[in-house]
Image: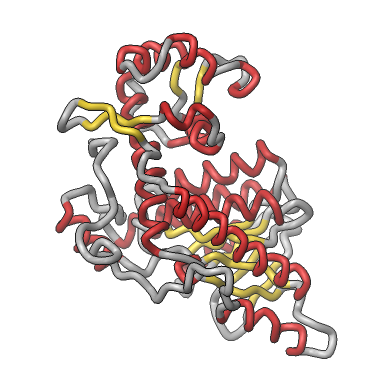
Length: 353
């Protein structure tokens, strides 16, 4: 298993050797990027305004500094790895993310042995008011410890298995980087409000794995705010990734718990050669499924899970973004009775709600 402290940020260069897109200026005079100009044009496209089934795609790497996304992704990846290391200690390695639950009492013992904080402080982190009375903690609960941004944040550390030392998880976050996060959320807010006015969905594109944890986290923040009545913000899930099913099931469960509408775009993925080359160069596990057949199986597994949600939740929506004929047929066979389709007749992309 990878070291929880091991960085996924690539080495060297202004963007750590990663392929980074052009960066917008980080100043108050920020000018709207192409996505906003495109959204402005939508109502003029037809006399009645934009189609109710229309959508626009955006890339978050165009809305701020990619270096920030790298750093934020690194933090989120280390914290998630730490969770799985604690799960392995409790004999729960290898389970699907939503099936992995830490025993809080055993976790408190482990954290106390590491010397992270006092027993009283540790008990305060895992109160029944915040985690319920089950006596267990899942990955969504674990992630909420980072989300809280309270006094707890100064205690969040991960063990460096090479040095044996505990290292602060958030120590690398400067005030400037906090401001970068706020600015990116503000820019997403501008786009989401314009999309609402134009009557279109906003699809947040997936990107490389070293950007994606931060992209997904920022997208979730916007979904909490704008997906109240119906899905407006859609996150994109790359099913050629080994952890695609975990990502889909975790986000859908979060939407259930918090009461907002889940919106997903399912794709296979576009960076396979680059991801594999980088994993081999830096020395971590290849994040891509080993075979084409495994990716197909992952896509259909994720799709089945979301379609099952559509049976019980009329407000959830999914875009099946595939040019694969077998997947299109699979989707049509698997659709729940009464599901509404929206699709482009010139492509094989199918949306369902």
